[in-house]
Length: 135
Image 1: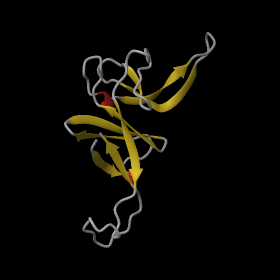
Image 2: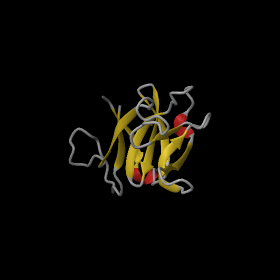
Image 3: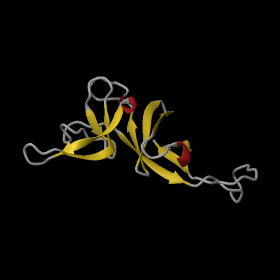
Image 4: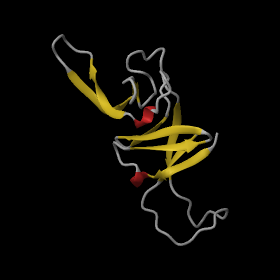
């Protein structure tokens, strides 16, 4: 499993995403309220670029005539046919037990420092950590 630097945390603020190529795969990295998630940028329906779709919320089960909107920023809607997937786990909204998109582990790590002898460094200040994608 390789590690790929996606960018600094300040470059992907909450509600934003970055699409990267890692080991021959297009992957979308999303910041959902300060937590990072990664999805394969391919809708299982007809291979559309899923991560370029609208990020939205969804309605929750409720009484007839009542509409509860929730999970804002946690759902991505395919730009071609509107299929919706949960960014936090890759499961589809309409059929979570049978349809999903591949997810990848994401961590936030601090940048290497001058104390690491294996890295040639220059004096700098680090204000934010790096977002690291594990493929």
